[in-house]
Length: 266
Ligand SMILES: Nc1ncnc2c1ncn2[C@@H]1O[C@H](COP(=O)(O)OP(=O)(O)OP(=O)(O)O)[C@@H](O)[C@H]1O
Image (cartoon, rainbow, N blue to C red; front, side, top):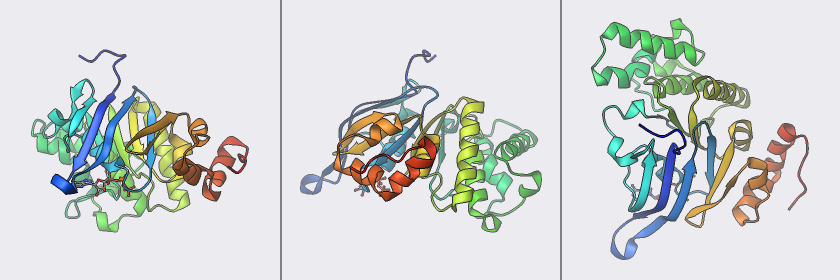
């Protein structure tokens, strides 16, 4: 049983090395990060800094080269396979729905695969999740190709939550959505985070999403987490990536409506 003070995610001395011999390269070097229960942590960093690798390691799909990635008190790599969906839910960037399955069968997938419940109960559980994410019963029989981008994200979210995992990982949750759909999806994520007591780790390049959702931000650069903290504090940290990311025109615009003031130019 996990003690309540134990972080939901603990990453300690992580090295992620790809390639062999002379072409070997490290994406993470001695990276440290902890995520406490109830946090909504955003991971940001330049392209290729290993954000997706980190999510895959938390999911147990990728082994660390050195160091440890512990989720809910157990090494993440021990938890892939059956039952993993009860511990960690993952929303992939483009939803990654099965195109040959309808909405309900997509949502039900992990629970049905487990094979422990009669089909009527699996369907009831999937229908409850469909409604939890703001979709209607009549959407259950639609095929993925007939859904809007916002609906695909909702179905993918319902699928990630089918086994009520305490930890939810989101890879670019609002990528590809128009501004209104993006705002609606952020509102849904915020509501579910509070209602279900979820711990959330997300990768995002979108500053509106970051400011709308994050309780904490961790910045990946130079192969490690260079700073983490409240979004506005992190935005003031002196590092070239942070200047570029937060203090460009886009960043200043994203901070203004939320926080009432446009910070001075760097
Ligand atoms: N399985 C793998 N084998 C070899 N190299 C890999 C593997 N997975 C990731 N990499 C490399 O690790 C680096 C980090 O990749 P990752 O996808 O995590 O970056 P990212 O921070 O998510 O970038 P982006 O913001 O562009 O999506 C890249 O150079 C990538 O090519």
